[in-house]
Length: 316
Image: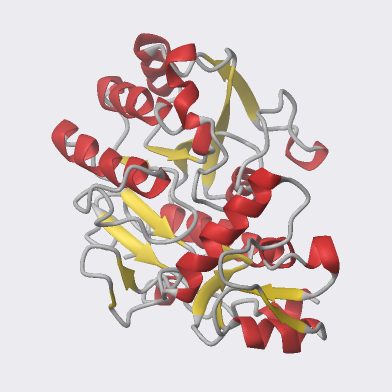
């Protein structure tokens, strides 16, 4: 299953989770990596993707024009995400085999152009769309008109193009849990529901390491990657567990109220995500189509053999 020759990989978006993936790829010494960042503002036509009800954890900060100092050797290319010929030329020039997208909710529609360019390049064999959160598979069939639906619909476009893909479902980022429960606002664990529903969480560093490991050691054409949804899980916890781990009081949010936050937009987002978690939908084993737990949260963890996954306790 292992393939040790270096792979040429392009990562699109270098904020938030993109930096963790990029850092792990560089550390692997198994990838030649180029990083793409947006050179133009989002087209006005796409502004409806900008509203904060993006129904996802924030995983990418605004595009930055420089990389962290430890990643300065990586080529950073500014590109117009709406220009297929320009993007295709970049992928072809660097003989890119794998494209990894970490664009945020505001930029999800740009992935159609990125996918078209990847196909047109003639070199790209695998496309990794921007998931990095709760499972979205099945959302489009349910007619969801939110970020879950937007993400899920892209897979149909990739299948139409005949461009193989790998989707990574990670659960919540461990680093965002204090924000998620409102500790950042009032120093308690604010909970919607009874706080007894288990959900999946994974550290950002483990996500980066897992993605780098599987993409550099497993052949791009492998059935383990081709058109697969990889469901990982670093830890599985409940809100009650979180209060115990953080040594914080548990406070139940009255029905109809929102999770405390610093802005109304953040309160709406936290509340939506907590409702998802309370309903079981934040397990990476959740099936959005049938609204049932599949029982396979963390089923892809085995691909990183021997790795000890970081638990929430380890982040304290």
